[in-house]
Length: 171
Image 1 (tube, rainbow, N blue to C red):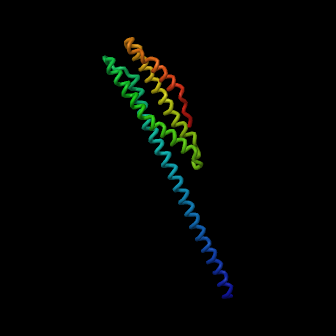
Image 2: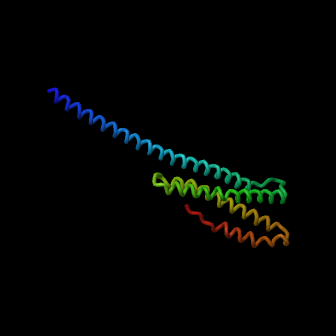
Image 3: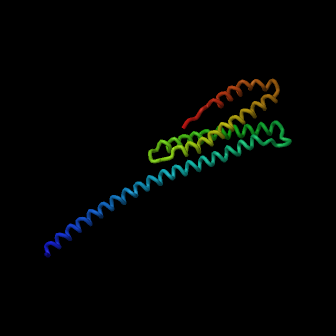
C-alpha cells in the first residue's frame, strides 16, 4: 500500500511540474501579446493625435481664409495668403507622414479595423483639398484685382490650380 501511495504522489508531482511549465509558457505568450497590443495602441494613439493637430491647423487656416477682415487692404490680404500658402507647403511633409503612418497601421495584420484609420485620415484629406481650393481662389481673386502688368502670373496660377486640383491621394 505504501508503494501505491508513492506511485500516486509521483504522478501528481509530475503533473504539477508539467502544469507549472505550461503556465509559464502561457504567461510568456500573454506578455508577448500584451506588448504587441500596446505597440499597436501606441501607434494608433500617436496617429490620432497627429491627425487631430493637422485637422485643427486646417480648420483654423480655412476659417482664416473665409473670414474677411473689414477695412483690410490688398497688401494685408496678400500677406495672409502668402503666409498660409507657405505654412501649407511646410505642412506637406507632415501630411505625407500621416498618410504613410495610416498606411502602415492599416497594413498591420494585428489591426482589425483598418477602415477607422482611413476614415479619420479621409476627413483631413478633404480639409487639405478644401484649403488648396480656397488658396487658389484667393490667389485668382488677387490676380483679377491686379494691374495688367501683374496679370502675367495668371497662367502660372491656373497651372498650379490644375496640378493641385487633380492630385489624388490614396491610402
